[in-house]
Length: 353
Image (cartoon, rainbow, N blue to C red; front, side):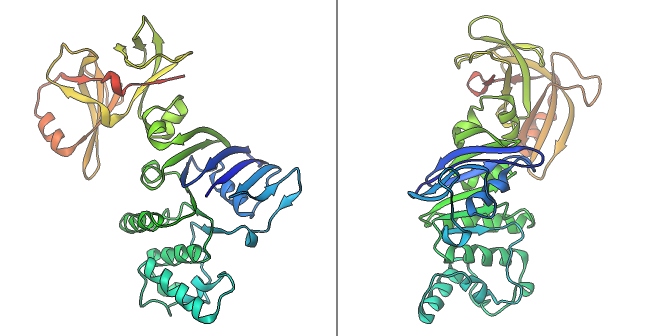
């Protein structure tokens, strides 16, 4: 299976211009209004690009030069919307059966039963959407999208309207379902952790343009620009200047760092992810600096520590770096006298243009 997309579409606030090829799963990550949803709508045939080409398994769905623009019903694409888009006057079984290819009555019933079991909705076949929870409605929508045997499954922030518990349940359900799905999956989200868990590859969009595309591990571990680092959740970024070979001055943090990775041309920033900062008892280790606590922020399982290097802070906003630690670690750290010593592992430093 292969989906090839190379399109351009002017919009009121930006021009969408993306090109990518996906063979299995791809998360499209970006801020609201960046062009993520419009990309899916163009692939599905719900919107028409101004120019470009969309090809699915050798079948041309859209080609502006050749005047090809297949209608949505002929594209073999399933679309899972954020708001479910179920038909309120149809039962669960009827919603799933809607859009099935021409089958005998017995074949259609078997297909519906198979997909009801796939999303674990047995016993709810004759209920209407208003009689279901949000999570159940989304599972019906997923079953309906898959029942038509699409070659591509498009999902536009399908969990954003659900509470945390339901979102976690449905995410596990989706990952399990996709493990046996033979087609291509595109998953749009602004939640970077969700994007990381569900798909193999990642496309980062900003203002209609693809600013990063490739294997998710590479993009998260080695973002090449400041903006990609920010959009993938890096909270510690400083301006950077090369001093000597293998040394970079992080001007925003007031320190010089030993680096291992080869320095990119036109280096402008250096970063490190908050969970990759390490507290050490060895103050003489390279890339190790005294730090003081400016403020903390708490989640159910983690603490974010806002730290100032070299001297104590003058206010809660006077800090250089954020470190994320599990609460068990924080219970040990909070009773230790300041300064603590913070280690910035050269292997974890991100060098950016």
